[in-house]
Image (cartoon, rainbow, N blue to C red; front, side, top):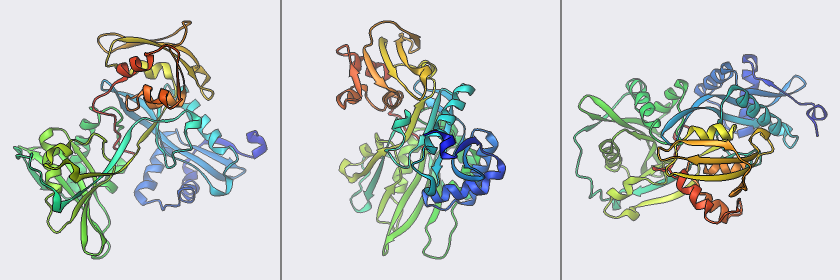
Length: 409
């Protein structure tokens, strides 16, 4: 069914759309937009990459997007398109509006030379049909203070200090900016997001209080932890970690040890964290760090597969010919030889040779950062291996340590 038959058109979002767009986002996600988030949407509209789907004069869907920077294995920072909201009004679903929005967003990124797009998926079953794949993973953890013994923590040459929101808002972005450039999967964070992250509105004695702990080595802040103290059940108060970012091992271990030592609390509960969380190995009993959820993190879409594959570095020398299937981005389709040298750089070139692997755009996007093994996708039937051992060979080339992780979604 065409857009004309549906009565829908896609155009760039404008500042005049802000109220209608925010209403559409609130209805689509059933969540109120905070003033800080509204301001962020306004900035994204001004960036010129956001789109509106309109039915006559009515805004019925939108993609809120802006330019971002993604760290890929190397580590190397590359331009990317970040989709912070992709939504269709509940009254206009199942009419192809999201497909139209997505096709327009990807085409626009391709025209601008943005080889990769990034989003955080509210539902896992929506985006793979558009060539997106989950490329990072997250885990959430719980530590019961009664059983925690940080026996392998011997102290650090530094101290933990609590900062006010203004001081934290001034100091923490520089720490995050340095840290995100060192780990594949991380994206930069817009300035409009920081005020809401470092502060929270307190409303009465029962409200959660937000705190900002900094690890200071000499006169330099090498890490921070943003956390709240909440009482989800009666008087059993928990430390809930919103975000922890560290530039050194000392900062990392000291901040986690501090979070485990806060009086009048019974547990430490984390938000999304890396699946390879090292703090487990600081504990005398590693089982004390209980994993309560593992979930997908950042989803990627390789807008220009050749450029994206050439932008990252590789962990092993090798050559693999892949046949890529990509109906939404026909310029990606075909056979590509990925040939990496001892330095980690790779040449990506069209090939007429028989393919070693055949895969779709979503599978390649999942494997791109090294967070999902090609051999796992092969066993799941998502990759066809034409030459035995080629999936393992590509795995070795794509390998990434530490595992990819994205904080700022």
